[in-house]
Each structure stands twice: as C-alpha cells, then as structure tokens.
Length: 148
Ligand code: 5GP
Ligand code: ZN
Image (cartoon, rainbow, N blue to C red; front, side, top):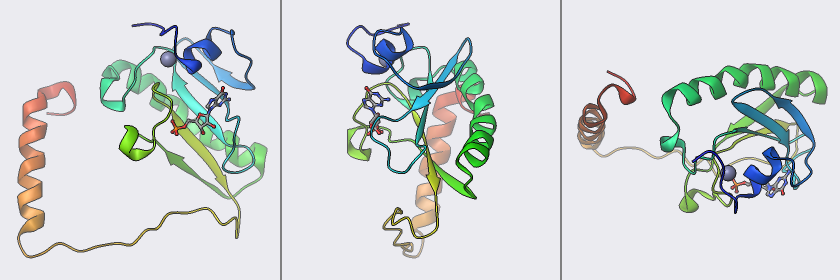
C-alpha cells in the first residue's frame, strides 16, 4: 500500500496536514515531532505506508537507513547537542501510537531527565543458549529476507 487515507503520517507526506519538514527524497521523509520529548525531536519515516518495522521491504529499509547518519549529524549540528537517542516503538506494547513506521531522533542534553529504566537483568544457566537457538531457527525460517 503506498498511502493509507486514515494515516496521519501519510497525510503529512501528502501535504494534507502541515508539518515542519527537514528532509525528503524519493523514499524517505523527516519532520519535527509535534509533541517533542526534547527540543529538536525529529521523526524519520518511509514515504511508503508500512505499519511495522518487519513490514518494510529490505530495499526500502536500506533507503531509510541511508538517511540515519545524515539526520543524526543534522541533529548534532543544528541542535548543538553532543548526542541523541534513535528509537523505534514497534507495536502497541512498545508504545507505537502511529501505525506508520517511524524512527524518533531525540536530542539529549545533560540532566534533561530523559532516559530509560535500564535495569539490566541476567540469564539463568542455559537460558541464553536456549534463546539463541530460537533466534537461529527464526532467522533460518526467514531465509535471506533478513540475513543468510
Ligand atoms: P509513537 O508513540 O507512535 O512512537 O510516536 C508517534 C509520534 O508522532 C509522537 O511522538 C507524536 O508526538 C508524533 N505525532 C503524532 N501526530 C503528529 C502530527 O500530526 N504531527 C507531527 N509532527 N507529529 C505527530
Ligand atoms: Zn502512513
């Protein structure tokens, strides 16, 4: 599907809803988040309507990825920050509200109060190996679509 008439980001791409656009090319589009987590918060999206990260055709994912360093450098230069977070909320459980894949670029500043509850855990004996086997099986099942 090239555009979803009910999708707010497709409407932004089509110019039906105004947005502060900072980049666009044939495949990708970047604009300022209307409700920023921090000043300068950007969203990078594919022009094609895809709901989930895993729905992205690999060639389109590659086109989108080509812009990541460029947008990242623009965040550093334009916002005069030393770093940023790139975040994808994939699926409702992960906090995805807009059903059109998007990469958040969130400029970080010292003591900005943002961040994760990054409570690193640990694996019980053997558990990591079990999960690795599951991943290997899953990757094999996907064939070369993801990786050989
Ligand atoms: P999600 O929770 O789906 O990862 O994030 C969706 C993001 O889209 C939110 O950060 C939200 O502020 C942003 N957003 C939602 N509607 C609009 C809009 O109409 N214009 C812009 N520029 N950003 C939007
Ligand atoms: Zn869309």
